[in-house]
Structures are given as C-alpha cells and as structure tokens.
Image (cartoon, rainbow, N blue to C red; front, side, top):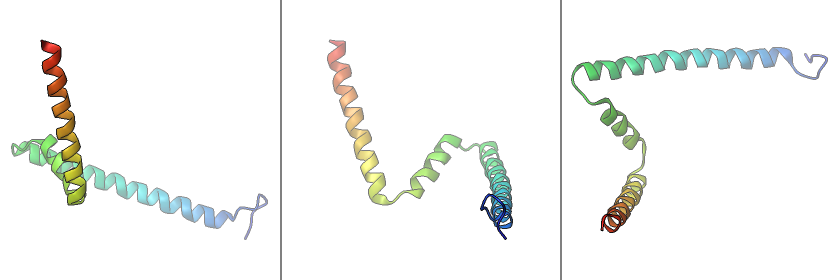
Length: 87
C-alpha cells in the first residue's frame, strides 16, 4: 500500500531493517577480524605485513605485477633524483 507521499512505507521499512541487520552483522565480523589480528600479534606476527598480504591476495596476479612495476619505477626515480640533489 502506498503512503501519501507515494512511498510504499512497508517496503521502505523492510529495506531499512535489512540494511540495519546487515550493518550489525558487518560490525560483528569486523570485531572478529580485529580479534584475529590481535591474536596474530600476540603470537609475534607483524600486523602491517599481514594486512599487506591480505590486500595482495585479493588482487589478480597481473594487478600485483603492475603495481610492483610502478612502485619500482617510482623508487628508481626517487633514487635518481636523490643522488643528483645530493651532489
């Protein structure tokens, strides 16, 4: 049934409630992930490295290769400009 403003109130309410439920699930999962990182840190693992590994594993091999190539290029450029600036 349509409300006076032309918005189906029941349908809108259902969407809002679904989103709220999913947001709560996302929060619980986020807390679980934080707990795993804390556990890994407690066992002596470097959290920055773990986060980097997770990030890299999400990417396709060609994306990683391209990113590494650009990073190498930038580092080379910095080395070149750094040595000429020092002289």
